[in-house]
Length: 560
Image (cartoon, rainbow, N blue to C red; front, side, top):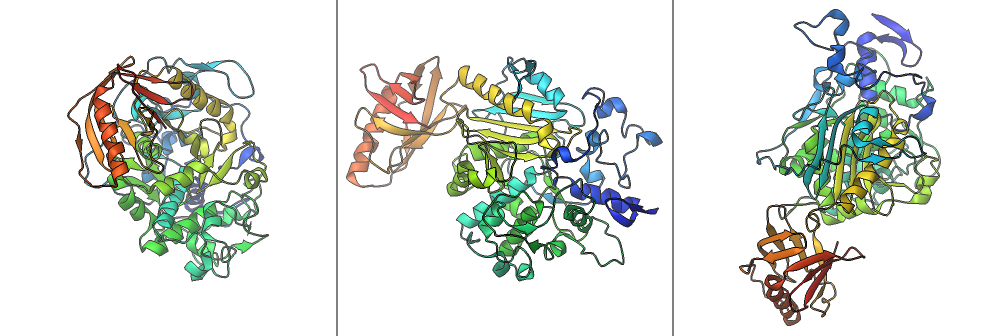
């Protein structure tokens, strides 16, 4: 059937309309209140896809089917099933997990977390973490503390092995890859887009720098006002459809559409969230590496992460991965990614992500530029396609519509991942609950930490009252399996330890590399290695520093 649609335009088939809707998934982060929303919504329990019977039976009843030809396949309440079954609805391309063994996440469940109570932002009745999960239509929630699972819950369409749409978390993955290529010298952040991609030279992106695309400070004549039937976002979605309308003059594919986007204003003056920036960055990544973004992500990160499952991207009719919102993965694998960033890009002694790239994510962007966007996130910024809170915990986050979140809190050494199918797309619908509960969980973990030594590396700032040599890297890392490792000054060392309730025992049989260094560094190294086996106690002082002591009063002081 072909018909005229008030937003999607004339002559739109039911199949094409559905695929346009799917192409929009992941673009809607700033849709906000301008989009009409139902006044009253069924609860998470009432809209559970199992309770509603979606796609159950062989075949399912006609009124319980969700098909690739349905225009409402991603509308609530069908969304609560389709968010976990994207591969059954549209074409995709894989992100391989490689041949490495799965890197297990240790379990250290905190029985108190589910009942942890907090007050949503703006006031209201106290609620628990479990209640917040239901109120935000959670499909999966994972909390990692010191790299261990302290809370994990699944509901609705999602099980532990299930793949879920991440929506605009995809943008943050694209941004991460962009930062890695900049550090490696493959991309020049100051280069103009039109010089790197000649097809975009006459577009609005032509005289924008790679950095301006990464930080979304481009000035473009492109509207993402979803309440306006003539907004550019709808034409972009039609171009990204997996089955574009035949015989028309409209661009086919994401890359063809990007060439027609025009400039409006001056680049670099203000933050403006536009999905097209992410797909331009995806094109820059592909053009500079000679590989599509799904292969770059697989080779650089996913195949080395110890992931449980292959991930995937949705693609347009030309097979171009949707770098702005098409990524799908399991809850735990997203947790592994968040933990990798929290650990400075290191995994089991390997530097998978350059530390300079991780630093760029953690520093945030220009808060003045962000404020001019008028979003209700005071004090925040946006850089490298990540959102930055600039709060006391230095938390930063990847966010996607309908409640998708990776929340990284360095102060609490915590990663939270939520996958959800909230009926309202814009995160403003759940931020009052979500932002409050993430901080409440962090505060709880900090106040009730049974293993404060675990987590990120401790950087030594004093050895037995003698300080440390400027710019020398001396560090300690305590692993959950009892391994102690670090840098003694110029050599790496490894050993075993036991710690409990403030007491510490480090095995005297420490192993180290045998590099020769300047005499001053070698002396500092010997002081540390001689002192470590004598340490028998630890505490965290009022400034957050780790103080390791000996019976005779010598101490090592370190800080994260």
